[in-house]
Length: 250
Length: 250
Image 1: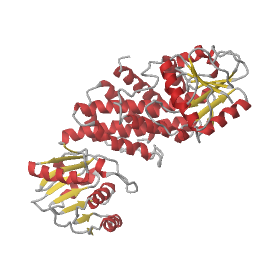
Image 2: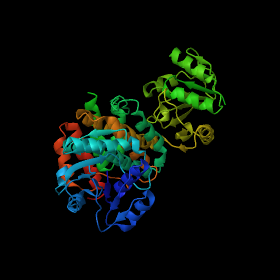
Image 3: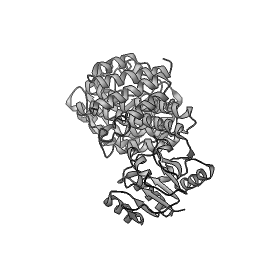
Image 4: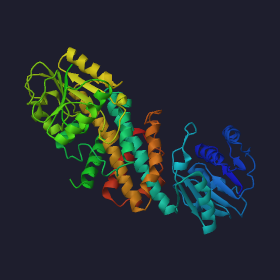
């Protein structure tokens, strides 16, 4: 199967690297950013072009959500699969006469950071069973975790990721505001944060809950509210505590 | 310096272990739970008693917040330091004629889980400079991260920990509700979660923020709101997004 990757950003970089590491040849990486393409080309031994999209059986579009539809119109071949890599778009944003698909790796990518691809889940959607099998087989060469998922399912995957990652990071940002204001080094909290996330490998998060809200420790909850002066911090504090109390029926 | 630990729970266990690992002898571990005391005694070669509190220069009280005051009255010696290990209480909950202190390790402890004590921050408060030095020296034998902190500061430390750990765990619990309802294995999200927490070792959390809210991606935010049926999940979704938008002035 001839594969062409479209894009030269973080997702394109890591797809190219993951395929390269698993001895799956990539016929071309195509995009606009010549410098980024040249880097991918050099590192993973893949020809690149900024002008002509090469022939392939599978095109993997790894560009920003906003640019997917646009770049998909540039693929004029019909007998091929074109897959985007977005978690938040249906396959019909792809505009062409080819067979449409989604090939969605659930991870946050940055070029400087090495990743263990075998752990990264791939969610696959195709228009027919043969293509589905082809893309799932490809994903299985990279990762142990491969799942079929249509757009409906991808929406929930993305929503779960927003709660467990984007919002978690924002809690870190708000926590750091509090510790910075008191000259407490935020890195003092890193071992505790790591323990919190490593715990859920062994224990359901619901069973691992600790803190004043789940103990219904009114004294501490009142002290904390009195310490918080930032309105967003206070709103988060109240919302999270109310949600914890509701979950544990306190 | 003769040290006695009061308590036999998770904090007492790990204090005993940390002192033992650093060749600091403990004269006795005292408590009510004979089985738990015998375990600590056997593992770390410390005499135990359920009847008489032994003589010491330093008593470390590692019991539940609610029991600290009560057990502190049982120490009748005057020329000694008595320290509790709670992040959320002042030192004057200790009731006796001895010198009062707080010796607070910032970590969530469970007996089954090994920890790298050298990374765990210790926050120390004493009534006088000599005792402060004594306890900070002791903490430095266990950990690289030792900081003086009075009750005011401990309140903010605890509040930061609530945001960055207790609330984070609750987000995992709510995220899992969403993925479970769609038959998506929650462990598929663990690599993404680990990447999220490991990123903040290199990048300020504020700079590491990703997701629809910080991109002000109204389309996705509306789709997500339409997916959520649980009122607490919805309240969290709205509160966190509003806070993110405020932080980045969107």
